Image (cartoon, rainbow, N blue to C red):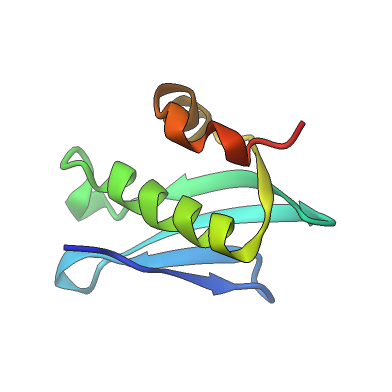
Length: 93
């Protein structure tokens, strides 16, 4: 199943609707076309089941489509991007 990230620019957040209606989120601060990814959260009921990766794939795909680059601030996002080199091109210089 493919999950879609929904961008909420007014709230500076991406959300991903996961199974059973649960919603994951990534919040950010913005400087021009660079998003500083500050915080990520997978609902408690879905933790430890791989949904963090599912969330990140959807969010990073949306960020790429919108033409942004990122600075990972959240420790989980930093770890995810460090171990999934196919997203390295999105890191801001």
